[in-house]
Structures are given as structure tokens and as C-alpha cells.
Image (cartoon, one colour):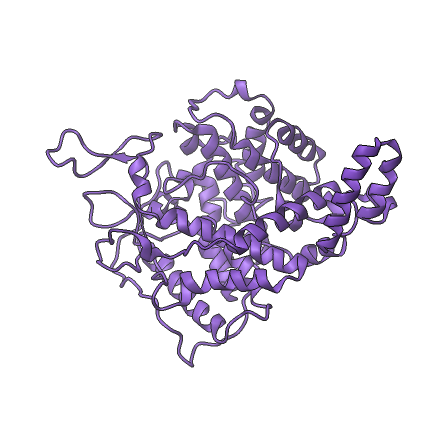
Length: 477
């Protein structure tokens, strides 16, 4: 739920280099003392058939899916306290209700079939996107192949809508699933299920389970390994599916069809040179499908090696600080490291406290960023995008407080949130009540009693407005 309620630019096809396909380091065991080599190791390309979406046969089980990142106990506890006067919780619930209502009546059809052109395969069911930092080569008569200009976004990427449609679909499904869960509104679930069916199941509109043509560079035959960053929000979609599978609107054999789709996608990630080593997606899908053994192996091996190869001993993420958008990509990479840490925890691997033989760790990397988050002008690297990505660091700092128990992270999260406020942030609904709940507000009992406590100090006009709002708000529950 990391991007809900935020407006930070996403990394598109060129996310942090530490998480892009072939930029992986070697595979070392989590508990070894081996250090990474000076340069990344490129996997050997090999042939793998590109999968096409299929309807599940009777041999595919129609069994349920597993939680990926969200903790169902936390969701249940927050729902229990949803009538308490907790400013963060109430604000999140209000915004969730507002957006869910808006998405309920939205008539956009989310499908890969809307693009005017097709991928090299000729199949409109194949997802396609253009590499955002690639431009026509002025030295070539036909401009091909396109060449890279890092930090300069080519607006031509908007000519193919698949990227934006997928991310919008994920956001719709997230909000509708949470809206269904907290407000017990089956109409939200029905709309969310419709969105999932259109993108993954319906034979006319579904996407083929691969990203072979993602981040396509014109003049080249196929996409790039970096294109898998297009689906960086996949883990958030999976948790929404887990919620919606409990609704009355969930369709017969929906689980079987999705199980087949995500199994094919997982196989593509594992076997295609374009999908190799993308830990967040692969671990998320494996946990979702109940394949914890594979997820555990990824955390113990490839991910641990990645920590070793991408960081300097100071904690600096050197592949990110050399880029024009250095702060954005450093924060985004830090966010991904924490997602990886949380995924690893789900399968019994502790990456948060893992330290390489030369002292590199997730915590050291966060501590490297921390003083600059509190003093942005001191950031010494080229940074042409500004510091808006700091909004994403708030959740990371809150998670760090939860993981390490060090109050400096929570205090820093308050300061960064004050500097870069998110007016509405429904991620609060997925965070622990015990840690982030407003426990002092329990004396109010309920939201309505809280309003009554402040009425005596208000003017008559203000009292009327608040009373009307409170009456309306309470009807939403």
C-alpha cells in the first residue's frame, strides 16, 4: 500500500538500477561472508517461450490466495477502531470512502487492447511500453535505434497507454477492495472484481502473462529487463485480490484462472532474460501462490547479494546517486529495500538485520539518507527533480521505527511529513494500531463523542457545520 494517497512521480521503466533485470549481482547465501565483485554479473540469455493467457482447466485448483504484504490482523484491528476518534484513521477512512465512490462510477475500461499499435508479436494482448529516457538518434537517417538521454522523458511514451492503464487499474482495485473491507459495501467489491476480470481473465480483454515488450526501445527487437519495473505495484494488487476473493461478487473459477495467469507470469519472470532476478515481483507472486520455499530462497540468495553489490560501505546507493534524479531514485530504491525486507519477513528471513562482512546493510543505507531528508540543501549529488519523493520516505521511516524500535526514525517521519504533507494517506489503514494509533483519543470513545467535546469552544455557525458533517459522516458506517 505504499503509493496510496500520494502524487509522487513513479519511476516508470527506469527504476533504481539495483532492481532492474540484468543489473543484478551474483547469488550468494544470506549468511556467507562473501563480498560482491566490483561489477555486476549478467545472466546468460536463453530461449524461453513467451506465454499466452489461457482459461484454466479442471486441473488448476480453485483455491484461495495468500496475503503478500498486508497483515490481516492489523486490518482487523483498525476496522475495530474505525469508530474511535483517531485523526489519522478518520482522515484515511474519509478519503477511502470518497475515492471508492468516485471509482465506483468510473467507466474507463482497463485493458491492454486499447492501444493503436501492437507489439512486435502482432498480438494486442501483449503489454507494451516505450522506454521513457530514449530519443531518436539524430545521427541515424531514420532515427533508429533510439538512444538514451537519462533524466529526459520522451513524451512519446504516452502514445501507448498500457503503462498508465495498468497502474490506474491497480489503484482502482486497491481502493475498492479496502472500501469493501472497511465499509462492508458489496458494490465496491463488484466493481473491483470487474476490473480484475477485464485485465486478467476475460478472453477478449486479458493481458498475456509476460512483459517481453515492456520498456521497448524503438529500433530494437524486444523490450528490456528494466521493463519489469512497470509492474512495481504488483504486490499491492495481490493483497487487494486477497480481500476481494472473500466477497459475494467473486466469480466461479476466478481463483483458478488467476492462479494460472500468475503461475505463467512467475515462470516467465524466473526463466526469461528480461525478467530474471526481479526480487520484489517474484517474491510477491510466489507468496501469493503459496510457494514460500521459492520466496525464501530468493530472499536468502539473490536479494542478499543485491544488498552487497549496490551499496557503498557508507550506505550510499551509488547506482542511484550518479543519476540526474538522484534523490528520487535513492528514495525509491530505499522503499524497495524495505518492501523486500517485509516480504522476506513473511517467509522467515531477516533482511532488516542482515549485515555484509564489510558492514553494508539496509539500516545503514537509510541512515545515509536520513540527514539529507532533514536538510535537503546538503544533498551533494546532481538532482534535477527536486525532493518531492521524500513523501515516500515517510512510510519507510515509520516502518524503520517498527522494525528497529529507534525513536529517531519516528521523529524524522513527523518532520518529513510536515515538510512534504500528504493531505490524504490511506496507508494508515494498513499500519499497526498499537504503534501508530491515537491511544489518548480513546477517552472520547467514538467520533461523535469527540465532536461533542469540542462543541463548547465553537461559534454557533461552526457548531452547525460540524454537527451537519458529523451526522453525515456517521451515516457512512
